Length: 258
Image (cartoon, rainbow, N blue to C red):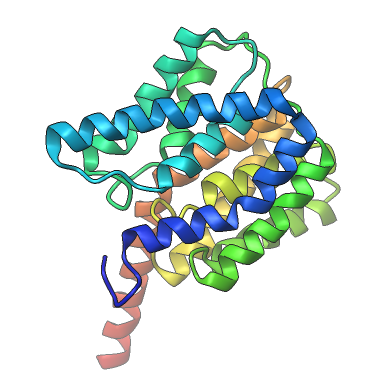
């Protein structure tokens, strides 16, 4: 993907820059332990990127820092180092690097890591994000929107469904921080989200609908667990949503042209 200055790493840097308000607030709230956790994931994800660079001449990406940040904020707590290394290895390697690196992957590596840790170690508690961290996701989303790396239609689709759910009496206040952070870190990923205009609306709406469904029916699940599961299923459905959008457009063209 090269168009003037807009190559793969420019987009990755813009995504990373958009995450700075969220990262700064999380580090301020969580303190030194959060900084050590972030460094740990940065180093280990960087090792895998270095290995693939040496073995396959595959260039590393700044997007690895976004992956490390997402895992550091959202990963279950009280897990041992070996458990975390297994999860990060599975997510970074199987969801990203084997496909040729960031920009060619189908699923977000942080989403896959969280799914691996959640299913593999279901007894581990999930983090409880406070409201300030959730609010910090708003400037992150706005920066990404203004720089063009986040799709506004995904936001519109999700906000529409959440608005309808609120009018129907669904209480989202307790899960808002987790939803906002997962939405910015995982759902708005410009690589793994839907690519067509209609597909992006459906993708954002599907994520929100899954969150509402899980919130109502998945008793005992943590807010981050609900949001991450919704992000995973929405990402899996993104290619199908694009296919539906393209098929609908072609059908309209055929009717229009006779």
